[in-house]
Image (tube, rainbow, N blue to C red; front, side, top):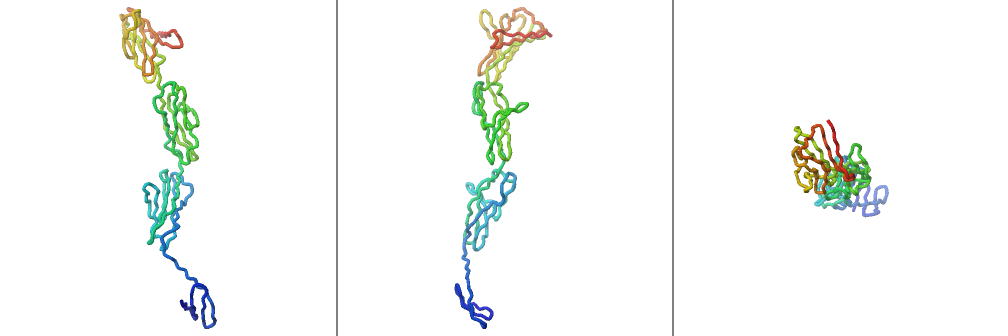
Length: 324
């Protein structure tokens, strides 16, 4: 190839070549750089910002080598199937939340083809959320063991769990993910909640009610006067869960007779004599009150309230008489 410059002539090939001019002959180094058309390559996706906290913003940038230059960039999130997000070189996300975590990649395209970047992982950090208490399945009966488990979604993961019973002053029970109560009793009834902690903060679960089922106990009979001296009412009460049903009995030398059902029994002074008591019953057991003696023809004073109860630890019944 001949290269003509001002007042000189050169015969050019790759490498060194000779030139002639009016003043002198000289040599120059000729380099030919040929750019070969090609599809995009070295496509690279980069997360520009640092730590990505929930509620913050993040920017992802795509770059690629291509000749002719890249015409279109596209951003995708790796899903099933992949989701196209934008056709810009830069992809920005505002108000980040946990759903934005995942693998992202970009595609560079020109007239000759396209090329995908290696996926980059976007890791959104957030304090614990959806913290919840899970009770072991089935009914909780007095004497059983029960396990309460705490779960939470957090990034970074939960470091510590704490358990509390909701009272006037909440009581810290343990700092493990599971809380087990052995030989459970009615005193364990109540509201329980857990707290999940990670490096960013903590979150409480909604409280869950622990319901302990048990047979009737502390069954008592109370005698209440009526407006008329000829009538009076017997009331039966008991501590149980679930609530008890009540039955009334009259005991004589001839045996025991069912005289009524429900929490109360109305008698008159003319009612048959005998020893009266009530029975409280639920699916987990039954309990009797102490006996109360009624003699036919006895008039009941409105100035007296008699309470009769039975404690299995004390063989004798207790009678409480309150004068008005």
